[in-house]
Image (cartoon, rainbow, N blue to C red):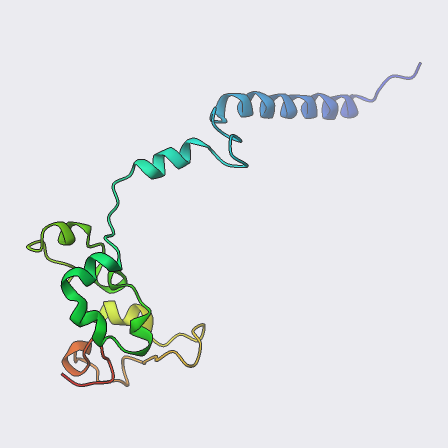
Amino acid sequence: MQRMPPQVLRLVLLTIAIVATYGVARALLTPATFGRYGHYRGAALEETASRTPLYAGAKACNECHDDVSGKATKGHKTISCESCHGPTRAHARDPDVATVKLTDNTCLRCHLSDPARPPRHKQIVTIEHYPGDRCIECHLPHQPNKSP
């Protein structure tokens, strides 16, 4: 009978050690709920459902601000209020809690020139488009084509 060369024996032992280490790590590190509802951790659903919601939703905004939602034009009509004003659940419960103050960065998140955006999407290059001015000095946020 022919002996196995030592380098092959070392490779076989190394492979066995790697597979065994993987098996032990998988058994110890895989959460108990993994695979319950598919290829992810089942407890993630309960954890997500237990979080306190931060967003109020468009209905909550429209209860007090239906005049504003009716003024929104074109693309801004399809955007959620909370896209610009931030999470408003606290404001919906208590109107004295202020929403996020609109800044140029609020507008530029969507309107800063970016070749990845579709050409029909209004985009600006800040250096060429009235540098130094604030967006809301010339544009109404809910009706950007109209002047204040």
